[in-house]
Image (cartoon, rainbow, N blue to C red; front, side, top):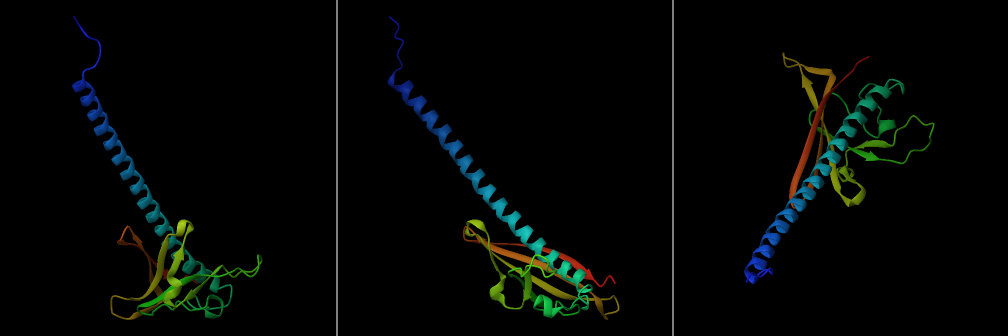
Length: 174
């Protein structure tokens, strides 16, 4: 006589296989979510670094319209970025725009390290700095018409310090 019901051993094997499969899929989903969050933070940090470089490029370009030297404008920007300054670090500080028609952007330069902190939606905290380095010619003389700018963004992710750096050269194009 044949029975059509499952035996206890067959049921235990089926439950064990389902548990292994569900555990593997759950692990894969968690790993994917963590990688997605890590990629999002890296992208946000890259955009913050790019914004810093673009802000200095904007300042350089608009200084001519404001009748300042290409690397000056402390009355407008809060600080000069001074080409030829070796090792100067500035921070991009968000400020309130005074007027829609104003040519003044919504940020200023600062030398205060407390202004390095940028908090995005969701409470993620990044620290952004802009390092200004002097550019020297092959013969060792200082090039007063060029400055190397490196934007560094750092953040802590799951107890690990991470950072991204972007670099460019600003020149006196006039």
